Image (tube, rainbow, N blue to C red; front, side, top):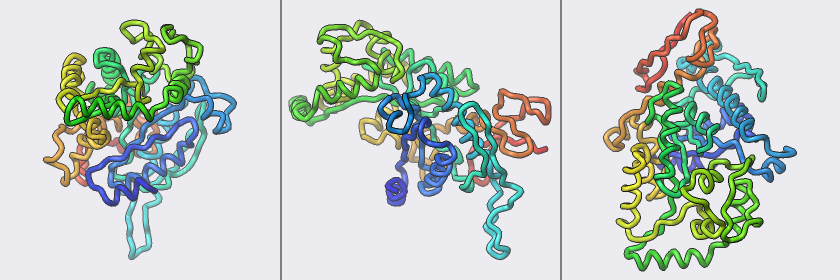
Length: 396
């Protein structure tokens, strides 16, 4: 497995894998991610996607792609199962590794997870002992309303693609509001912006590189891909016809970026000019200062404090590395090397996840414990053994 091999020869590099909730059973993903968390020593993340291509759905045996909001409804249930498996199936002290008595784990501290919902049904014990993170770092790409709700509840890092920081500002503001609505801090959700950069020692050298890259790019290919992404047949539009907003089952946020969120109507010609290299973003071309200064000013305009760090590493093609800054600071090997304060995300995430200890089976801090008939005590404490924030557990 390439990730485990790369993790073996690195120390400070994080790895985020994209897995589609529509096609991957949650039980198998839970085991795979726990295994990778062990192998990478808490440097694994999961980019959550629900799919947007009809062709992919047909290839996976579906007649058609499920509806957009239904995919997110199913993903909510998917995450509920994963939280139960990652956080509730094994107690922290379940593993004994007692060679003298030939006992690996205490059976009474391991329990099966049972789920019978609208989209998923499963029953079983999580097949991996608790990994360093238990739940991996959660990424998501979203801008649509339903996706923002999902991100506000679950995501720790959000990818966005917008033409300018100004057009991104409402989305970032909305994400922070959603996070607060779910009892999290506004900056618990880190934002990474997609940018395309062509850099040279001089402006002339950078422009020359861009022209060379354009000779290898196919306009027809990226328009076909973009049409599938937004669910709109662009071949029906003339070069100067504005693209219209319409109901689509594909990537709604990508379509909104060139319609309702655009300052003025976007034509097919403008799309071609913007996506000269196949990316959704117009490339920033020039020497280092020409590349960095516009985005530094843009971040100030957008009040995008959570993204400055991410974009810095994006420029170095190491976006995911920065994300581990606030989580890996728990490791003594990285303390003093990463300049971000610890986030409360992990504490809050455990607050909204399932109750870890049996027999209570509460699934959210917003619910009431059926056993105690009162809200659970979710005040955070610090685990001395691992040095990480965890939820204080209520014993029977």
